[in-house]
Length: 235
Image (cartoon, rainbow, N blue to C red; front, side, top):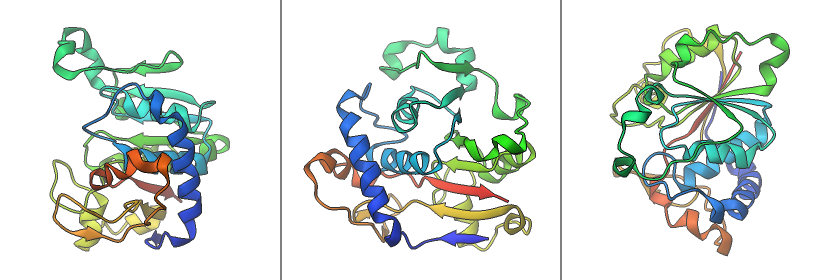
């Protein structure tokens, strides 16, 4: 298993992804103050541009900001949006959660990922990505995806501190990764902050320190809000 921690060789690719996203940023459906914000939006755009999937499963949709981001990064990809909240969506007061975005070309499902019966054939493995942004224990989600034949996984909120769910980063730092993890995971990459920032645990983390380009200013303004997006490639 390869754990990628040095991102210096990828800096130019991250800048390219950030600039491409910046070109569409003024058209975002709303300002996202919870969940994926500017720095993590760049991370998501970077990974999706690199993987170039033809199908994306978004697990955990809420207001739909990451749905919009996926469309910007891979506009030709087929998109499936899964969130059990859709079962009670008509009962919710829109004034309580604000503006939402719903893609006219995505398929929406109220089933949990574990219930959809996904089985990925070998010829589709390299062109399908699953994004988990659902605050569920990440090892459980990884195992569900592995059993479904998925190869490329993205996890938001892979935080290294105490949270409402168990993360790979917590287990990695505490030497608590299960023994089978190294057998089924080929690569584990945790996206770094774009600029020097202080995370909510009070610690500073090594940053890519992107150039101060005017078009990247909206992302730098939120540099303390990145949310530890990670990529896992399964063997």
